[in-house]
Every structure is written in structure tokens, then in C-alpha cells.
Image (cartoon, rainbow, N blue to C red; front, side, top):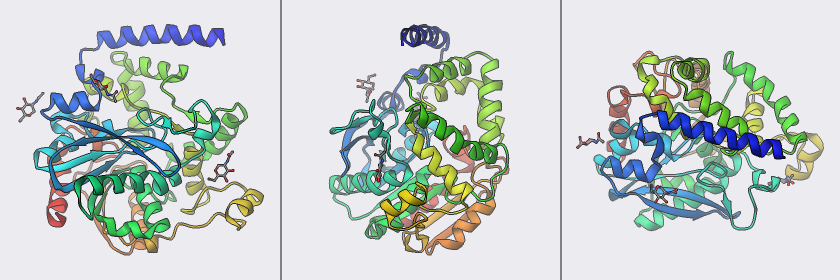
Length: 388
Ligand SMILES: *[C@@H]1O[C@H](CO)[C@@H](O)[C@H](O)[C@H]1NC(C)=O
Ligand SMILES: *[C@@H]1O[C@H](CO)[C@@H](O)[C@H](O)[C@H]1NC(C)=O
Ligand SMILES: *[C@@H]1O[C@H](CO)[C@@H](O)[C@H](O)[C@H]1NC(C)=O
């Protein structure tokens, strides 16, 4: 334990020095600070879920008859929608008068609070994207509708942020009516057609998950973990950082597009990404890929009988996801492949499919790309206008 404490201190000092050298002030501002810098006041709200999680919800007030809920992906946070500043989706939409709400799902840096569970306790981390869709979304949607006095809102999800809506629409069908339209950026549902290295990572995940479980590590990518400090300081190194973190990780996994992700932007990303989630969430994603089935968490036959009363975990019935969904798909996306999004399109009852023209558009450009005002936002704005 002493060694770990000393290591944490050394790395904390190291990170402070690295970030002191880094001149981009946006890497030091939180969502509220960024909103203010780019011309808007931001309100911080706490939403409490039915099962006791306390979620941080940011609000950039606009026209409250046009609420838009932004939902981030895995190991990410609300900040993903604002770190591009004037070129970000949150600022672009509020400047057009939309009322912006950005969720932080359970367990990430901003939402590590609970009414009675402690994040140092394994029970806090007993969730996957299932609970985020089943509890976090309904609590947040109802909170926003009550505050704005509306019956419906528009949702925009990125990556796993979309999976949550398929869980919601299939397990709590009454929520379909509360969504005017769901704009799905780089949507993740089926993972039948992913290629290496993502497929390799997914194959390794259950083994890694078991190992972590043996050591009682239910939280992954904790901001306090020593390895997170190592990752962040490595990524912040000039040149080396870009090769290792941008080319070696982000482009390898999400698809390569260096023209949308410049070296100066990397510290802004790394200052808040990755952030914590549960081991169980990662394992559930891997199960969807390896079992080739969009189903609830697989505990193994015996436990499944106790939990679900069936040997195999129940499928999510996409036929019940009756909300209008507009899928936005990039041609260079290493995670959300065209074939998998076509499978999703064919299962959703009320869907529109848009394959974006910009050929290099990868998984992360949707939130982090620097020219999305040209390649992506006009399409989002046209959908928003049609439904608002
Ligand atoms: C964000 O930063 C501001 C000032 O920089 C601070 O007052 C506020 O408490 C921070 N919000 C959160 C949720 O940490
Ligand atoms: C953001 O854009 C607005 C309007 O175009 C401009 O007035 C402002 O200076 C920009 N802010 C920053 C920090 O670049
Ligand atoms: C985790 O939650 C599930 C259902 O929500 C429950 O069946 C299971 O017993 C819990 N696991 C642990 C380790 O508490």
C-alpha cells in the first residue's frame, strides 16, 4: 500500500509538471468553465436514479421548448460534446437556440456518487450499459421534461450513448413516446462485424475481466488509478504522445483521420478521457460481440436462472424501440461498422439511415473532429429542424 501511495504521488507531481508545460488552457477547464469561455452560462444539476445513483447533468439554457439531451459513450463524459469549444456540438446547438442538457452516466468522473453505496465498494460497480439505459436515462429524461414543461425531447447519442436508448426503448417502451427523435452518432448495438484490433480486444476482455474480478477490481480507468496517471502523462508528451495515444490507440481502434485530430488537441482530450466505468460494462460489451447477440448480461447458466429465470439471458427486443431513430454512420469507423449498423437498421421499426459522405469520418470525429461544422453538424441541424 505504501508503495502504491508513493507511486501515486510521484505520478501526480509528474502529471502536474507535464500539464504545466502544456499551454492549452481548455485542458484545465471543466464543462462549466468551457461553456463560460465560449459564451454561455452553465447550470449544474444532480439527478437521482431509482436505484440511488447521483448523476451530474449539465444544462446550457436555450429555448426551453426545444430540449436536446446529449449522451456520451463508454469511458467518456459530458465534456466530449464541448471540448471543441466554438466547433463543438453543444456550443453549436445552443448558439442555434436549442436547450442543451449533457448527461454523465453512472460511474464516470462526474457521477461517482450514490445515496448509500460507496464507490470504494464493489456493489457500486455492479452495472453495465443495461442499468444506464434502464435507470439513468429515464431519471434524466423525466427530470428534463419536468423542468422544461415539455412532453418530449430530442436525444443525441454517441457510440455506447446510443446502446442505452435501445435498452430503454425495449425494456421501458413507455419512454419511446418521450423521444421526438434520437440522433445516433456512430451507433453501437451489434458487434458482429468488427475487425482487428477491436475484435481482438473484445476477445480478450472476458479473460481480463475475470482477472480483474479475482483482484476485486470492479472499477476500470479510475482517475485515481496509477495506470491512468501513466497513460495521461505518456499521452501528454510532445510528439511521442501523439504517436502512442492518437495513432497507436485512438486511430487504431476508431479509424484513422489525422486531419481532424491535431497534436495540440490531444492534451484537451486526455485531460478527461478515459474516465471510469465498471468492469461489468466492458464485459457486457464483449458478450454482445462474442455471443453475437444483443442481450442482457450473461452470468452463466446457473446464475441466469436465478436472475432471469432462463438459461440464456433475455434478448433486447429491438422491435419495441418505436422511437424515431436516425442513424449517422461514418465510412471509416473501426467500431461501428457499416454492416453492423445495417443490421441495426433492419431491426429498428422506425428508422432512417444516413451514410455520411465524408470518406474519412471515423468513430471519434463525431465528437472530437475539428471540422464537423462542415461534415456533420449540417446533417444534425437539418434533422433537428425537421422534428423541432
Ligand atoms: C467547475 O469549475 C468551476 C470553476 O473553475 C468550479 O466552481 C465548479 O465547482 C466546477 N464544477 C465541478 C462540477 O467540478
Ligand atoms: C467563439 O465564437 C464567438 C462567435 O463567433 C466569438 O465571439 C468568440 O470570440 C469565440 N470564442 C473563442 C474563445 O474563440
Ligand atoms: C448485481 O446485480 C444483479 C441484478 O441487478 C444481481 O442479481 C446480482 O446479485 C448483483 N451482483 C452482486 C455481486 O451483488
